[in-house]
Image (cartoon, rainbow, N blue to C red):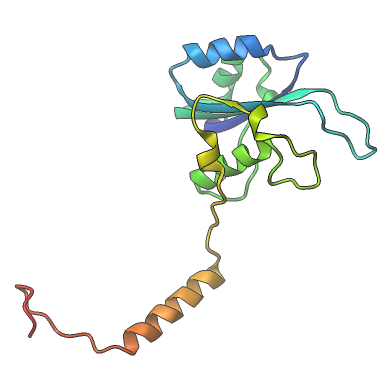
Length: 165
């Protein structure tokens, strides 16, 4: 399946990916702008059984690339490369959610990993602060509030040169 991504996540167990190779790719590939990753080795399934250790690797690319090329860089199957799992169309929100998932901050029912376990090439904590998209209801409330405030004030008329009329 052809899919071009600027933000992607690689999820792979430790049997299919070598983290030392991943580090070398991060150093060598100029197409990778930012990355953050963590080893999830304390996750359990629905029956409370420990899952196989696996990496979550969040990658922000300079440009969009086809997932087959990204998979090729990391010498993994293309099915290990995915797009951000969020309904938002906003790139900043997608990235924020990917970063929060590294420690399960946005998955409170899962094991909560310490932020010190995340390895990154930049200050990833600054970008994981909650970014909330306003809902239609929020926008309507703001619009109504602004209308009321504008209607309650007498706005002076100005001339083209900026002087009061």
